Image (cartoon, rainbow, N blue to C red):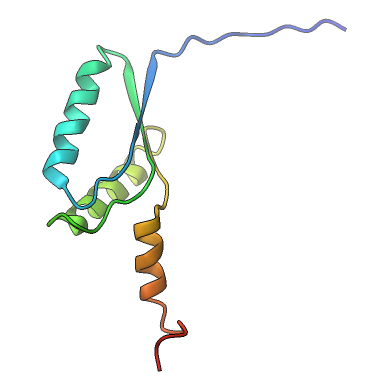
Length: 99
């Protein structure tokens, strides 16, 4: 039995980004900086949560990331953080602290 392997050299760089906390302008600046660091390589972004709270633009951050994840799912990967988990739990009408 003969085994052959193909190695694909991807012109790709991956950035892991977390703790955006509603700071849309800073997110935009960071994405531009990452694209520059990529020096022509295709950039992929792995967002590790905490998109909301603290900053003034949580909704804008969420709208932007959801749109990008839909339109460019191969480049924008978004994971849920503890702040998103808290928001989901707080909005649950069956939670134990609501009477």
